[in-house]
Length: 382
Image (spheres, one colour):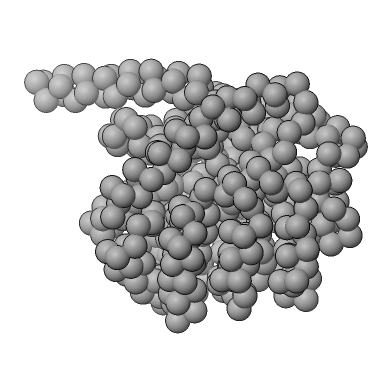
């Protein structure tokens, strides 16, 4: 089934390539309708993570209702959205999660991929919901990709998430999704956020994932109010000095040791570059011109460095997005925030839409692999 998923994804990406090239060119000259959406449907969460503060601002009373979401999605702003990520908080805490996903597949006419991240900590809720979403996407020919967050092996994960038996509970959800992959074609794996608390366990997480035959994505912790509400944590949990170099080497090792065309290597090289060069960004980002984010209360913003520029509960999303003052704010983000932004959000999408930066990465990654092999040969002959 993994081969079927990969073939479907590459086919759809290839079919959209001409449109991507046109969009990329036009976006350099004027604002265009977004093609990527991250929708945080709630900040309510079943975890109390040490690196994220969204759970502290979770308030079900502030979340848009299903009816409000439907009205918001009636806007023409979403007509070109190709990739939508459902996030939180924890999406499965909403009883209407499946209905929200159904609305997304109905209201976004060009949608080709739906992604969802979950803690997996409430398997009795998550498993039936995710199963229905997979079935929904299969029926509507939408690619589905899901990940369960794992931030350590055993007690390390429990400590990071501050949930008793969290690792075991997430494991139940993982096992059910792996079983579902035998009958349905979709992408599934785990994601792990690395920071000072679990950095020493990163190799253990990698080994565990490989033993379980799970695709894994490592993310470097970052600090942002609009998306994670965790700016106040930077002084306590950001890796510094030796830890920072340890993290850089970990990401470089992924580039050196993992398959060259593994899409995550693009992100790992980005992390290693930024740590090594004093956080000067080299990688492209779709949110500079083609992305948008939506918060549970209806707040619309351009990216995790953006302030909220309007509320879709109060006015049409398209009117907010293209307003002169909103686009001026995006210009400010490009000038002031983009040059040092650590975010990996949909960077693989940017690689598809902006071929030149990805080609340069492949050249650099190939050279890094050769240097690594040469060092190994020298060490073996010594």
